Length: 264
Image 1 (cartoon, one colour):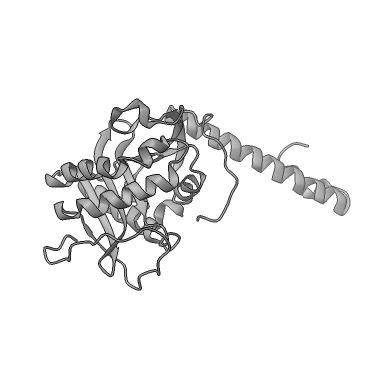
Image 2: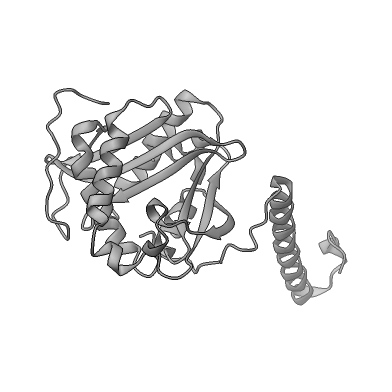
């Protein structure tokens, strides 16, 4: 039946129902055509991005107290979460949270010998070097509650001529997830990036096996654009387990994440 057939030409409720069903089907087809056109216009294909089933998604101050290390695991959610820029003294706490997050989420992608071995020392070295120097292109924001580091985000502007700024790290302490900390870190990071480079895009890489993170980024408006091989941490091939893959999620404008506008 042609699209736009007048209802007045139909005979009875059964025919009306038929038109409605056909209309819905045609609208669905149009949606898929629009999505395909948008992807082609971007010059990238999402054919390598696996479809996942829907599921529940899951201010620097010189007087701020040094973040203290604490055992990882389930802990009471702090009543008040504050956010601030990272500084050199935070390297140890950030590294320990980073290592714990890798141990919990990267099994199967990173070698057990690395995760159970020198991963903490590796992260301490990386974060000590990273936070020791000022970098106008870097944004590192910490979330803390009761003096305890509960999450952090780290990004760099202008990392890719096509995709824009890179969100390199986003981690929330086990036992403090699903409380909005990750979302707040994303939005604050995007705001800081947008203030430095308005209209710049934002992208990140996530392990293909990490479906929960993919659902989280998708809920924030991120679009999966491509699949690639995971590089070994520190360039040491033996730190990988097999040949894991990663997916790129991207936002055309980092500023769209501010106050959740990417989800509207």
